[in-house]
Image (tube, rainbow, N blue to C red; front, side, top):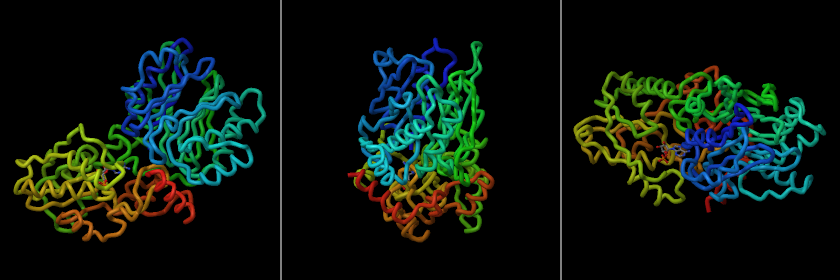
Length: 479
Ligand code: AMP
């Protein structure tokens, strides 16, 4: 998972790098491994560092980042190690000069690696699959044979990419002095939106992964790119749209559940409100099973809105029962289970006065390996709870994500190899409560979602061999 941003500024006199950095800080939750930006005036100016946007960019480095057009990126390394050479943006000096950022994961990397090497003598140097997108886009653009790009030639190149590159990719490319193009894979799995800001000296445009970025930068979201859609902003800031190669839309539902922040909207729906609605649905599962908790608490921070909705629908109080230690590291991406457990133990502290003697429904956004939930159940019991119902805002996760969300092998997923009763027993909970897959699907009727991590139905039709190759690549990259 990553955060991407592209800005077409108001006019050539106003450098865009400050706005890029500010925008990246609003997308920081999407990746903290590296941050990068590129601007263009007569040439590209590229700055990328390991770490977070607010800390790594120094004014000295930025003084040369001139230009009103630019791209930014925050990286969460789902594939590959955290090395500076893998940080985005990447640039290519032929044809025209192209800078690019993306969010997602490419699934036919073996085939692309072979084709690029054999047919075009390219060497893939990094473990970031942006290389495949960038080289393929460059080759397709070169094929159009235009002296200057036209909207038609750009869209032709995008379609060439969409036919060759499989998987999930929300992409923004800055073509030196000629324009900026944003496009998605044929299923539109990862988010990409266009925003506009009107100023006294003219409009500015931005493409970003989340609307919250627009809110902070003063842009109004005007469009979310659909499956396979491409938008080109030419050098005169005229907007051209194209439907591209598209299949049924399959927008990642985990964006609503966990990845995006609560103050973002997709398809006109606020993430916070959808989490609350799932909380309402989960209340029905409680009533069916005859559970009667006294209070609802959340696992901070992403369980909050599910918990609010659940408490509201059950007509019982929502309480703050766990305090998060904000200095603790992220447990999920640690390489060993021993380390994950250690970090999870440093993350939360229960409020005994809230929990003691109560039947507690405790809500997290999701359960993956069960490391967090097992520890939380133990904490709540030791704080004197009479009963512990562990609630997941998401349905049971049973399948790996191959589209850019870090998920372990199914063998490590607690729900993939256990019944619901066994999951509760593993966690030490009186019961575990999930919404069903159908509950979630009915909430998103009409949007077209990817729910492969719950259902195993991959919208881009991957073969068993491809799934295995992706699994191997991930195992290798974790070493
Ligand atoms: P686990 O402890 O393995 O069951 O993972 C569940 C916890 O990790 C929950 O608190 C989620 O908020 C968080 N989580 C879920 N998916 C991810 C992900 N892809 N990357 C990082 N954290 C995640």
